[in-house]
Image 1 (cartoon, rainbow, N blue to C red):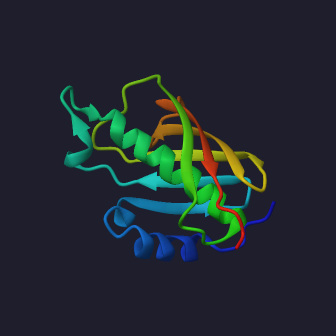
Image 2: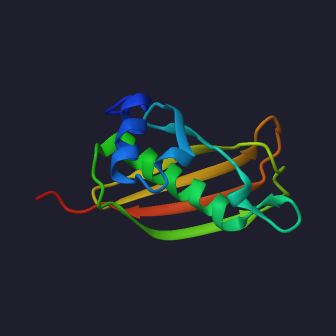
Length: 140
C-alpha cells in the first residue's frame, strides 16, 4: 500500500474534521503501512499516580488506527471503530509525549485491521499495545 496523502495534509484534515482533539495529535509519518503519531501530553491527560490515563492512551490508539486507514483509502470521515483490544503494560511517564507506531495489517473493502504500539517518548519498551478494527463505509 502507498499513502494517498502526506502527513502534513493529514494533520490539516484532522484539524478540520476533529477540531475538538485535532491539536492533541500530530502525524509524524505515514507510508501506507506504518503510521507514527505523537500525542502531546499535558495535565488533562494525567490520572492519579502521575501517569497518563488509559482513556488518553486509547484515544491515541484509536486516532492512529483511523489515520493509518485514511492514509490508504483517502478522506473518509465516516469510517468508524468496530473493535478494539488494548493491553496496558507499563506506566507511561508524566510529562513525556506518547508515540504510537501503527501497522496496517489488513485493508479490505469494508474492514481495516491495525496493530498499535504506544511508547513514552524516549523509552524503547512499549507502555501499551492495541489492535483496532475499523469499518469502512461502502462506496456510493
